[in-house]
Image (cartoon, rainbow, N blue to C red):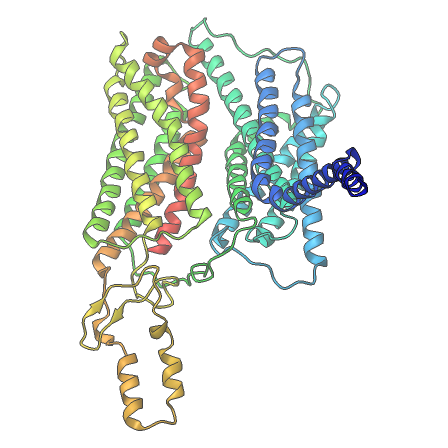
Length: 586
């Protein structure tokens, strides 16, 4: 009986509520500790990139919303509201860059890993020149504010000062830190870098909107002067300038806008590469800077490129002079532009197609290594082509269906179709050139990262290994070094197996084909500069196309152009940078 009672007591103790609550609390503690460890260890690495991208995207959308409200000229949103928001973003970026540079200076750790492909020296030099022109534009803005300070908000004077400070600090950051591969404080740095990316994108959007508004106002004034009463001019502001330089400052600003726009979009692209490199493990075998090689004399490509540049400047001057005159003169200027464009597009298509044909005949190997900078170049080329393709297909549709028949109708159709083809072929040429391996001297210093071809003792070539490493081949030098004290016969065998026949090095890229590729690249380089100059400085005949205005209406067609032309400007300048990289690689 006693034993039975004892067993009952033990049974009750085992299954009593107190013991069950203890076990459940232990399970809860275990669960929460596991959740805490999971959040601490895995959350930043997996989700920081997504969270920071969403943060930057929402910043951009807030700014774009303010710009769209400002474009309607409503009383709720004014220019000073947008500039205040952008100024706050620039100040936050300045604080982040300052904290980053101070922390890097205080760290006693060794030199951080750096991506050799991110932000080459010539790109940073070009951005420095664009930044200097942006600083001149800020000086003109300050002068404009001084002239109108009695009737404008103080924000219009503070904004150019902060923008100038932002430009100087950002150029310093690009020169000394853009190649850094961040491995510490990754979550915080991700948000800092992406904030800088979208701040520059918002500054680019603001420049594009300001330039488009200025061009549309000029277009409305010209159409009103020519007798088109359907277009209302911009409202006039009753504000008098207190100095005699206001008109000079205002007119000079819009000649500097193209350089400021290109500066901000290129900076955002470089910072995006830095953001993608955060936490990245570099492949040190491929992350080596390629030394510059001597370039042979080039004649045909530079001569044809300079001819294209001179033709573009001539067309620009003639167009700007004649477009302000009578409707017949304006129509003749538009026809001249499209005839020039047809010739240019045909020549560029032929050059890019010849380059692709050479790659097919030579059968160069592809470089499939991970390179965020190169991948971004390819994606930006494709993305920025969409604007011109949309504009061209709208023109094709309008020319085919419109009832009006101006003198430039069929040349506009040919130009639009050739523009689509030219961008397709040029994109193929640039992307394929960026992903091809240089093969001038296989395994030499000119092509670091290339796997050398292995030749057998009989002189036959063995294909280069790809992904499988022959450790015995790698350690032949060590083998031979260890046989220094052995018999001469063994040393002779080792040296014979380790030597490669110098006279049978594979010359995959003959000199003539390399010359053709270099001439093609420099010709396309100059042509893209020429095609950037025309719309950047006011040669935009698409706004004067009557078939498009009849089919889509002026407001819809101008909206399409306000999106397509900035993308086309960026495409041309980005193609210039990519073609220069192709020229160095070939």
